[in-house]
Image 1 (cartoon, rainbow, N blue to C red):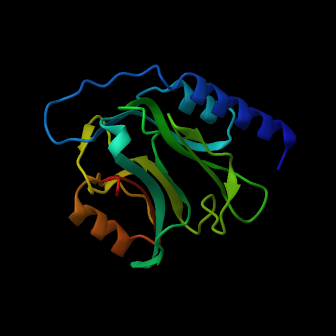
Image 2 (tube, one colour; image 1 turned 180 degrees about the vertical axis):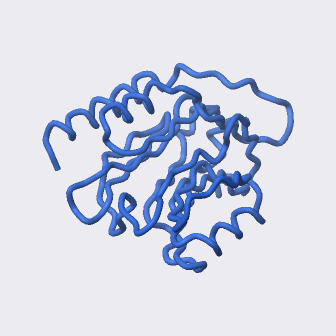
Image 3 (cartoon, rainbow, N blue to C red; image 1 turned 60 degrees about the horizontal axis):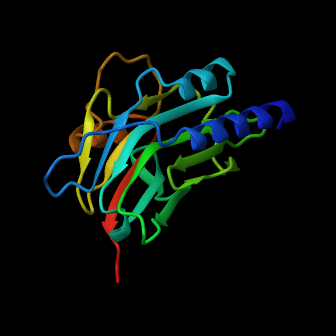
Length: 210
């Protein structure tokens, strides 16, 4: 991969990590463990688009009771209506015991590569993952390929053990104007059955085992 591109990617990830404490999401008094909303007009996403590096999704994120929970994020791949890979790549971590919570930016990105596969990376207030290869090419298809932010303008309130979808990749044959609710399981089943390939960026929080 071009050295200039790698330098730009590293710069973006450094900026994301440095400014990750800059967002705030109001807490609510219920059994919610985390709150996630899409960072509308995010400078990170704009910069990624301007440099034509690929696709990036940046979210505002707040985790409650971080010292008693474990955090997971991963990509699932479906082809021709069937699951092909339950974990293309992802992350899993436990926040340091002395921290009661964490707040900042959480995100995911794909990078266009001259190779036949794609580069992906993840980040959160706790870590930044360097771009790495996966065996699948998410940049080319026989039809139309597109990434969607799966949250829209919502703020997701995430409870223990609940899987939510943050982003969706779709490969379709024909142009399509139908809008789906990607938090609705029926809509997700529909696109999995109808699209050539679907990738889901999923997120979950569990209570930490003793």
